[in-house]
Length: 132
Image 1 (cartoon, rainbow, N blue to C red):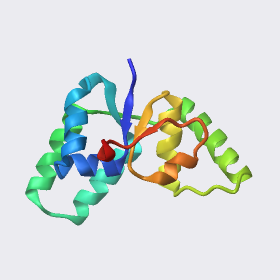
Image 2: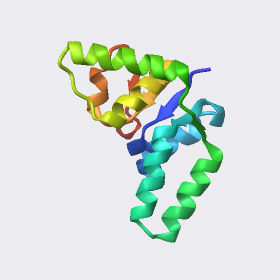
Image 3: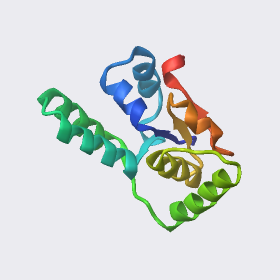
Image 4: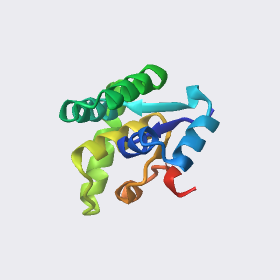
């Protein structure tokens, strides 16, 4: 089964009920969807900045339904390889984005994001569900 790792911006679009993102998430088997623990951290950080109860409920519900995958030794190996490769080619990716990209590569997942910066990561399969 193909795995889809949702980036933070995709989760944000889902929570804002972007029609194309909602359609894709509903169409995918729940077991195929996941997020990185990094994305979970970004979501929880965002909640500390916004006291809206509706947002808290929506994020809590989302996190109960989608697997947040932990970082482990396999992910760490991919991180080192990806970072070194990007530095060799003079490519730059924000630190948390680099961690998420390495995580997606380590589990051979498609990274679902509308952030074009991820397209510079070698061998990373990226889909933009806001554009469907």
